[in-house]
Amino acid sequence: MKIIGVACSGLDRSVSRKMIEAFLKGAAEAGHETELILIHQDLLGCTGCKGCKNKDSFCVRQDVLTHYFEALPEADAVVLGFGIYMGYPQGEAWTFMNRHYCLHKGFVGGECKIRPGKKLFCMVAQGAPDNPQYRENCDAVLRPFDGWGFDRQPILVASGRETEVKIQEAYELGKRV
Ligand SMILES: Cc1cc2nc3c(=O)[nH]c(=O)nc-3n(C[C@H](O)[C@H](O)[C@H](O)COP(=O)(O)O)c2cc1C
Image 1 (cartoon, protein in one colour):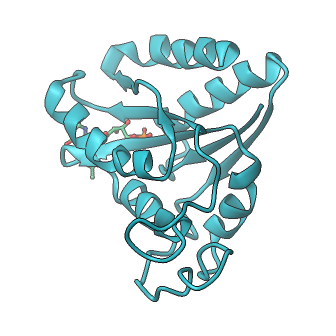
Image 2 (image 1 turned 120 degrees about the vertical axis):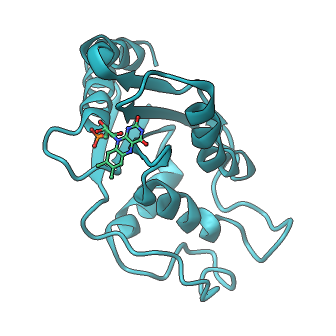
């Protein structure tokens, strides 16, 4: 399998990035091809220019996601990681999701430019204990991926003292992917 990790957090000590790295390490040890993309520095928003709608190619904006969209058609899984800010996924996660607007040809009901069934894993880091409200807020940013044919997997949440345990869980998940 080809697996792309996408890290939203720019912190050196980012917990969500460590979870992605652990997942990818496990997957690489199991023989899969992995790549990690750090999106925080160079990430542009969708401007709604609709430049993607008249072509088979992806978003016309040239940034860190240009390479992501080039790699996506051949990928079998994406591992997205983000922190929780003010109770919601951090802004980069929403921007990342919005940019997938380019995946449908034309507008509502248009054919998707990638084959369905890519697994979407999600690694979440937060200060507060795991709770239903934050999970619902995470689902809000992840649900649109269903429309692009992704096969959403249960999210893994790390908080407080459980962090190291969750990083280990991410590693085990990657090994079993
Ligand atoms: C601006 C800001 C807002 C935050 N808001 C919340 C919050 O509402 N609830 C929470 O549990 N943690 C909150 N945190 C803590 C982060 O979720 C936590 O530090 C997490 O580890 C960040 O992810 P990262 O380590 O991958 O960067 C906040 C942190 C920052 C910097």
